[in-house]
Length: 81
Image 1: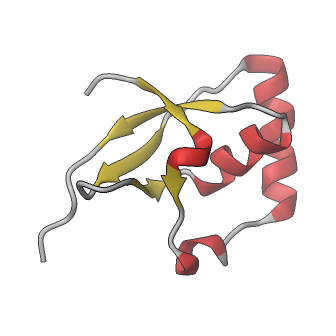
Image 2 (image 1 turned 90 degrees about the vertical axis):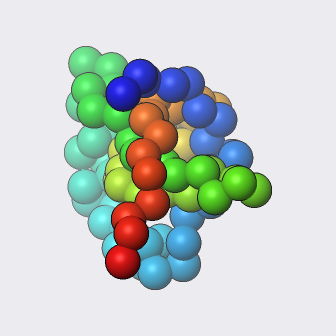
Image 3 (image 1 turned 120 degrees about the vertical axis):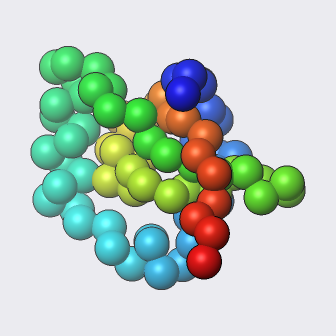
């Protein structure tokens, strides 16, 4: 999978996922990003209309905290049930 540069404001975060945000973890990740850059890409899926966050809420929120407009991510396939 290829790393992509994604616009943060174009990524939809499902309501249930938003509720799992941990302010302490976000601060910790933001500090790490300042020192080392983003180490792990977030994961998104494309539903044909928009990009939906699959994994990486804390990283994305940390990037927003730092004033970033883009984040490194990879596109994954939706899980089949």
